[in-house]
Each structure stands twice: as structure tokens, then as C-alpha cells.
Length: 19
Image 1: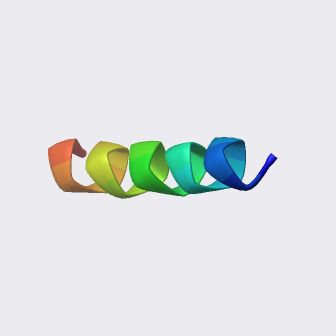
Image 2: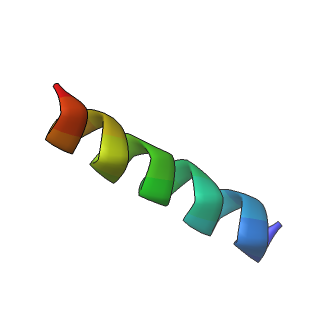
């Protein structure tokens, strides 16, 4: 579960950067 949470946060950060 911890990995999933980290992956989700990472994806959000990348999305924000791309946005």
C-alpha cells in the first residue's frame, strides 16, 4: 500500500510539472 501511495503522489507531481 505504501508503494501505491508513493506512486500516486509521484504521478501527481509529474502531472503538475507537465501541466
